[in-house]
Structures are given as C-alpha cells and as structure tokens.
Image (cartoon, rainbow, N blue to C red):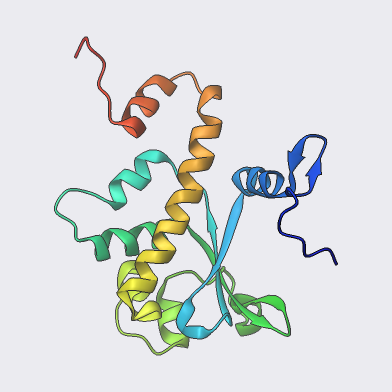
Length: 171
C-alpha cells in the first residue's frame, strides 16, 4: 500500500475518490447512523424529509435538544441491530408486522420510558452531545441532498429562499 502523503488523492476521470464518495452519499435515498452508546450495535436508518419538515423540527421556542430529537424521530425509517457485521431488522427478529422506529415497540424492547417519538430518542441516546452530533450529521446529509435536488421542482424559489434565509424583494 502506498503511504506517501505528499501525493495527490487518487483520481478517477479527473475526480478524486473522496468527491465521488461524497456525491454518492448525497444521492443516497437513506442514511445509516449508529447510536454511540451502543458501540455500533444499534443502527438507525434515516430517510429524506422535506425542508418544511426539517423546519418544523426546529420550530420556534423549542430547545436544541427537542429539535434534534424531533429531526431524528421524523426521519427514522427503521432501527436495526448489527450482528456479525450485518444489519438485522429488529421487527423481523421480534416478529413484528411493521418496522421498529422511535416508537412504543422500541421503548418496550429497550425498557425506555416515554410514549412520544422524541422521548424515545432521548431514552436511546441519554447523551445530549451524541444526540446533537447525530442530528447535525443527519441535517447536513438532508440539506446537501435538498440543495442538489432543488432544480427539479416548480416551486423551488420559495424553498431556496427559505434555505438561504433571503426574502423576495416584493414581500
């Protein structure tokens, strides 16, 4: 293996492998992240949510902790357990008809208090810094994808203004 750090990064057709990986992540339809307190054993798969939903998660008067938990809960597709390097569906293992999310099933399985998805997120994380870090990673993935995809929708101007914080001069 070549360990000479003075060489430029490997390039494929004029692009670095790092830029290719970042582009692939921005196009992905889901994003997997582990919950740090479980040391990689519990992995949550997240979906894309609308800019409007992201804004609602960070609504007026909400604490950063509550906003972060709501973002993670709203974007959750399913919670998995990593066994021997493979992700296994908790729902399938437990014989449940629907994917386990930040819901009552997850609360029961992990013996958590709370009924609302955000409360269950708090119970799974127990660490505000880890919660904030994962919410930031998810937000960055969401926003990067949103910015790349904005050109296709007919009402993009409003979404772009919302994202960059500018208002139309006519308003």
